[in-house]
Image: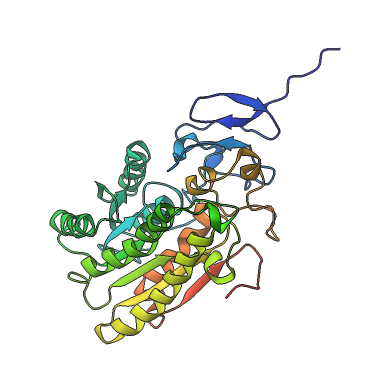
Length: 323
């Protein structure tokens, strides 16, 4: 009797090398096949590796971002939003749902052009316009130009989503270089400050700023000293800016998820750690981007959250100790 060959699951998506492991599904190169429907992928996930910043189209299984069960109801009809890090992960799903709710969306991305173009196509499939802007949010001048380009293209700005992030695990504080510390802070908190400052020139009464935080900013993380410090700063920045803008009737809130199946995490962990991503949550798996994105719609929509500002909403898959 012939033995069946086991499926490959340790995947180096940069050089296509494959090693043995468990639990790999067929690759969905278009992002709209089996990976976008059905059950949530559970641990162990396919062990795989990528170099930073990570490419969503190379992840197996593809992150679920389409939210096929989510029905739009014009909550953001004719609004204009700009989303940093909107090419993939949480940002991509937020972009799709914003468009489904009637918004035109500008996507700011670092260098992942293929992912950004795919996101733009899904925005257009919702019947809305998409604008792609390549650049680094750690540069204040770029942030100003990104906002001005969005306003020039769409005529206004109603919603800012600060979502771009840099993450780099290190086992010891001695391993965190000054260069890494600066890069993490420049991207994760300076970038949020730069974008908010640039956006405020155009945001009107009823506008919204939504920041992406993290459970690490509430509980800390021994291997993410710089990243968790920036996320804690984002939470405090959210609350302080909300107080600062209350009189202008511009709301500022934050979504702080636990582990999510995104390129950010796949590109920052060993193949073995990727396979275990999210296993320590009560649900025994990471969130999919489409499970996080509705929270951003909630905060962006005045119909849903006009009396809510300065909040940090945790989405932790059953964990209750943070917050």
